Length: 368
Image (cartoon, one colour):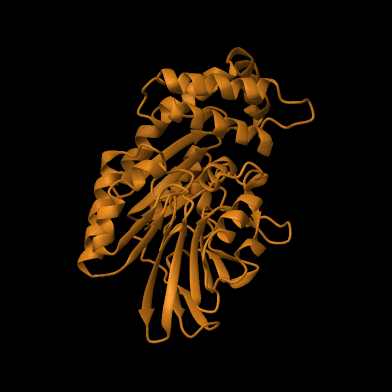
């Protein structure tokens, strides 16, 4: 079960596509059924390309929300178990799929979509879903590297009542939500320096037995390259790391010197390369300049327009390509929504109404 965010962007690099192709081909050759859904970072339409052909090889993919949820029933010694694949959903997409104009919010959208299915809860059912799931108003624990978590797209865990197991994607930290059978697997490895505090990572291995009985464990994967953040003065770091026996690491270095010595980067690069380690990032964060840097960022923020920020983000995610005409129209539309937000709304926390307007705008563009 692959619960979304297969890639980290809608248009993934070719290396990532080749890696997924190799992975899926190997699973298929072992005759292992694969159930995969699109997350909020994926392009659902691209991810499910060829999905009808893949079914012949036991690979089931749900990229976009449809009236009838993609599902597959298999049998084992305990009888039938049906897997339900629900990709990341927007209320507007569910409105279109169900032809229902009275859907308000993500929670209602998920409830109505599930209610429209013919699910036999007297038998075993597993759902794979990619959303922010709340437990009595409490948000899931994050790893610090997630984006757009909390406030937008939240649904209550009670939505999944009746399912024997709920395989969740979206949050990078492995955890249960309320019950042991409702779990975020988390990212299988540490992919971001913001995830360093969660060292116990790996796929969740679930053993379904008779209805109401299951076991699970986290299969911790061997780490080929330890990830570590090093923070301090340049000379202190150089002295300590020269004596360290650590090798084959991915490193983030934070220099706190008031002024970074000349050649500091090259010196550290050479040191870590001699240990077969890779310095992934080096940043300068002198404490005494924090306030002035904050003011500088505020000045820069006044210079750039909202459209500028969206365009820069687009280019960052699309290999420096400038937004095309349709994308520019969408960027302008979103910027207007931000500018016309009421004074009591936080720019970082758009309302569900704003989100729905944006989705409706995109769907109209697609229709045209």
